[in-house]
Length: 425
Ligand code: EPU
Image 1 (cartoon, rainbow, N blue to C red):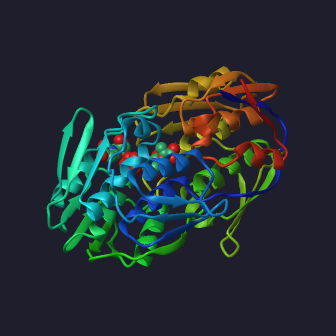
Image 2: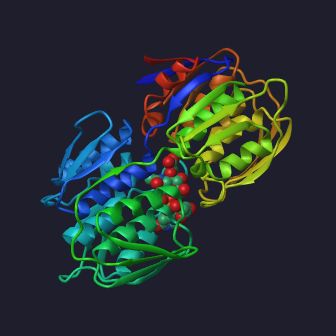
């Protein structure tokens, strides 16, 4: 087991290259199974979720090769073993994204219900409903979904999501690309990662258009072709480093991130007083903290894009512990995403849990080092951020959760002046 040992209190200064987005690349790997031709993805982050999905796809019978560090070549000629074991799905819930493309292309797939995780129940009913509307038969037995398409393939359908769902939208779009006729998806997700997937699918020959505010129309085609696609920059990694720069009163320039993709996070920076300069032409964002002025408290609630992302919520809390006054955070997407609070309290934060979705943060507080354990990815980034601003040394275990979504976080932090070591425990 590995741990991070972090000694905080240093301003972080320098440049950081932002990796490709976890929440885009996993779906794009799945999209590569929609064609028998080779697909090359560029800007693929070196994170363990990619490795895990690569293993899952390899076991199904697809060929995956990493010719250089950040490229990934995928050839999905056939699927001799269209089965995803529970053990793999527990590690990577996003493996459920293979449902839509594999049903559309190969007509069947067996995959487990990944169940809940540390941030909430995370059901998959929207995915299942969407596929059934397109003609699929899905039998749930012994924890597995046995999904099959009719002999003549999936058919276009009207799909309306009761709640905006990122992966639900992506599964429906991918299934629809090879279905007969037109699929209309309403209450669809608008996240930049969904659009990046659509761009990739269009380059493969898919006919997809956004025809209304939350409407996507897909006209099915017979086959798709191979493509080469560059994964967009990871807005969640960018935001993590932005908060590190702000809380440590540093000065960090992020490269490889489209400023528009930071969306509501930029507004939050403005409201709290974090100085941000963006340059869309060079895809850079510079974030500075001013030690002579205190940050302002804010009230935020999480929402689907273009609202404030649930994934930013926990990391932002660290900034709010440094703001002068009372801030309120309302998590509306997942029912159990305040687990970081008890750890931040142990580090000296003044946070009251109002109910399971609401927290009240009173600042500013001086955080101090502590021994803490990470239970999920974004909570993990949050504890790393807290340790970077805390006085003294923190020891953080459970860092494999951070490795799921952050490429070499400690190397990037060391390069901008942090004192962080990965140790074998
Ligand atoms: N939901 C259902 N039924 C479903 C699907 C979703 O009730 O069949 C509910 C969820 O429980 C949640 C809401 O709908 O309350 C929205 O969930 P969504 O489907 O949008 O989440 P997701 O697609 O499973 C992705 C990201 C998450 C991110 C959420 C919200 C990936 C691989 N994961 O999950 O990212 O928090 O969208 O934006 O894209 C992370 O990166 O740390 C992470 C958890």
